[in-house]
Image: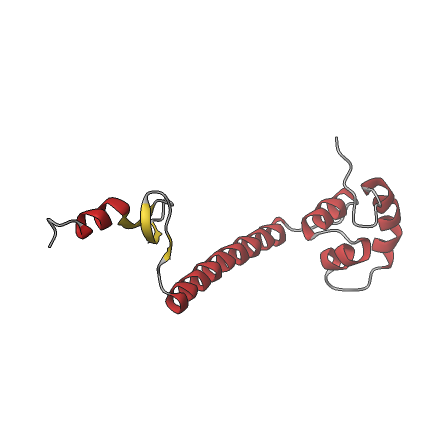
Length: 130
């Protein structure tokens, strides 16, 4: 099993030894955040290690934390989508073409390009078109 190390290289066993005294002396209200700051670990790691030390961390706290992470990820994805739409509005929808398309107007949600194909341009430019 891989040992969990924080940024300073302190492994879990060493943190757990130090944590026993730290927990006994901790006076704050948010022990998970305090532990994470003190030992420079992320919040999920702090929850696990505090539980291993015998601290009662409610399951609801962990679930609320996971929901907040999921909401943050969703918000970032929405923001990225809005930024891409703003870029299209500023620069126009047209992007450079490729071997199949003269102009790629955009992409479907599945990632397939759409736009003006080279054969459509050739047909339009032919004598029969006029």
